[in-house]
Each structure stands twice: as structure tokens, then as C-alpha cells.
Length: 274
Ligand code: SER
Image (cartoon, rainbow, N blue to C red):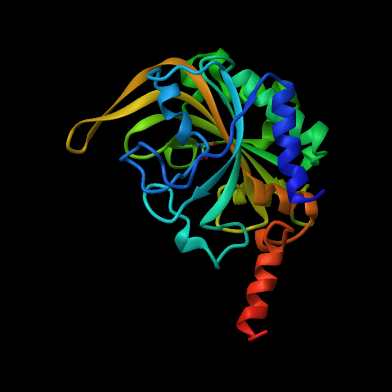
């Protein structure tokens, strides 16, 4: 499958499930002084999550152009060191504005990856926010992963650094649950796999982040922040198109996918004076 087909399959899947396809917003945010560049698919929906803006749909999907070269989400220092980081990339996302929440977000993610893209579930690992079960059993992402078929031993818990997502110092935020994919030789080496989820290497890569938007983070005085519940629990997901393409094309790096290899080859030819 080409990268373009992978993007289209994602958007069509969510359209079939009641989502409105929305065009990527520009890399320069139109009206948000808190951001220099668009850093996530949810940026253009920020005011919808906050309840300030209403749209005529409650479910959306997009493939968003993103730049992470500064600010809270800065990948610049990783580029060239790993096979999975770029500064500019495309983020595939589905969004719920007060409509579905954790259970359906997890069902959609599993169904799309396993039944549509045919990823091997034995290579999938899941991370959940460590405090997720404190808000009540019905709110625990781990339970929903188990319901769709994820084995409990491949669901790992992490703290705020890895599993609580915020756009910047202020704005919508919430606990998140990620899907990581193992691309090494032995998926049964559970101990080794578990130790590498959220680790520095490329053998296990985070491919999709499901954020359960629940709060607005505000600075009430310099350096002091509060979390206020959003008008309604919402969903913001982001999957790296280039990373998913690495998995589906069986290559070793984002730069070897058909999305980027032509650019690399063209630049190499230019550098050789051709
Ligand atoms: N906003 C989340 C992220 O950027 C999920 O889309 O990871």
C-alpha cells in the first residue's frame, strides 16, 4: 500500500463511522498566540474542545501537517538520531467533540489497525495513564483495551510525562493511551519488548496516541496552573502517517517510505551536482 493509500484508508474509515473529513489547517496557526507552528491535529479544533466554538458536526477526521521544531513538542534534537523522527510530518486524527469517549476511541483504533490495515496484534503494545483507574472503573482505558482483545500483560502504565497530553502550557489536555508497534525479530520476547516501550530505540515505535480530552489548563498566576473540566469529555487522536507507513511497507525508517524516499533521493542527486 502506498503512503497516499494509507492516508486515504484512514480518512475513509472514519467517514464511514460518521466523521466529517476536515482539511489540514496551515502550518501557521490562524489565531492562536500560544503556538508558533501547528503541532497537532487538534490545534484547529481547540476552541471546539473548550466549548467556545460550535460546529455542525461532533465527529471529525483529518490528516494534519505538523511542525515540531520548538516549544512544548520539539523533535528537532531527535532528527538524524532515530529512524522515526522528523520535524515536519503528517498526523492522522479522529476527533470527538463531546460525543464518544474512551470506549469507542479504543474500539475504532483496534478495528482499524487489526481488521483494516491488518497489523499483527501480537506485535502491539499499549500504554495507559497510571491514574486512569482512579477516576472509576468505567473510565479505565485498560479495561477497554482488554475488551477489544489486548492481552493484559501488554498493557503498561506510565506517568504524566508519557501519558498525559497537553498542547502547550495552557489549553485542552487529558490522559492518553498509546499504541506501540514492535518491529524486531522476536515478538515473544515480552520482557525485552516491555522494557522498550517509550524507550529511545526504534525497534518499538509509538504509532498512535489517543488523548481523552478532559481538562483546560490555565495559568492563574505566573507558574501556577489549574485544571478545569471541559464542557464535555472529548477525544483527540494522532497517528504518525510516516510511522504507520514504515510498519505497513516493512521498511526501517520514515525516510525509506514512499512518502519521503523520493525527496531524499532527489536531494542526494542535487548534492552530487546532478
Ligand atoms: N494531540 C495528540 C498528539 O499530538 C494526539 O493527537 O499526540
